[in-house]
Length: 482
Ligand code: BG6
Image (tube, rainbow, N blue to C red; front, side, top):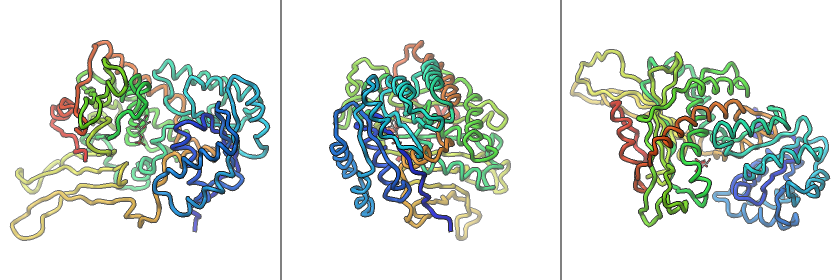
């Protein structure tokens, strides 16, 4: 039997920004869970680096606090907190000051994988990249992990790529899009390419349209300044939703390896049509339900930033010409629900007569919560009374199908282990990010030039009314968010 957990090689992982929010909420808890599961070897070591003057003990105490706050930890994970903390060290490091770099250099071991996680504000990326180079910490096999946002438009992404290229080879750079680490997102590739069933139908001849929804109930959660400058288009569409669209629309890669997969995704991004103004609906939540409105929450009363966006996107290639992709995402919506729904076309002829009730087949892949898949199919309603047709759901919850034995790991767990393993398949390549911005920039420039304000919507709704029209005018409807 193949072991489920294969330990990765021994490593030194430096987390820059180790006292920050992302490290506390995601990076360190993910490493701890991999440690508890036996995937992080005992020789794996994490070195926290940040400006705060902290001893290693004080850093470990901070991390212990963060781990104890983690929900739903198993007994084994709780028991692993102590041994995990022993794998942590801390270095006080100011990127512009040589002392911290020297101390870090002394900590790094020979003969293990070296990875550096830049969990800091993007303004600090150049100083960290230069610091690694100047202090002899950039070996040919050193890996750097870059968090989003990766630029805020094509020009800034190009500048960031050019800066990184001055220090590192592309094979050393791991640009994170955490959606690619989600189990169900990876499952899109398994569903498409490990089954014969869907691929023959996966084109404009048989698919009427695709809906991609990422609905959130949360607001901007203390990230007002960043979010007001970004909006849903930059925060979610340019990266996460674009990646989902690519995995649904791409041609089969010749094998599951990093460049083969990324080459195919890039071709999809390049084939995206420019979005027409009438194919975009932007929204902003107003105050309600005891909560402040978006503009108050971000501290900018005149804000015209969107907290919701719906778009109709076309792909100009042989496979997809004529099948629209409808994308929508927003904050403070009715429910947290992310899914991809592929709606197939009607059969060319109904042998049951023109009046037979008809519902198109739909394949729904639920990304979160309750990860799973549903296929809606037509059957005959049992019993006498003629051939009465009805559509029913073939429904599968992955948790139930797998006997509830395998907890679904956080995206960061998978991605950080992939960095140590040296596998870039689930990370974005530089050209991919630039191409995604090249498509995004004119869309944003368009609504800025037209001076458009987003449509208000109530918190707890499914978005602005106008978003419904985007589908209605094409004779289609959004799936319910619940
Ligand atoms: C982040 C965005 O990248 O993804 C957030 O910046 C968003 O605004 C988050 O809330 C959504 O991630 P998830 O994993 O909760 O769907």
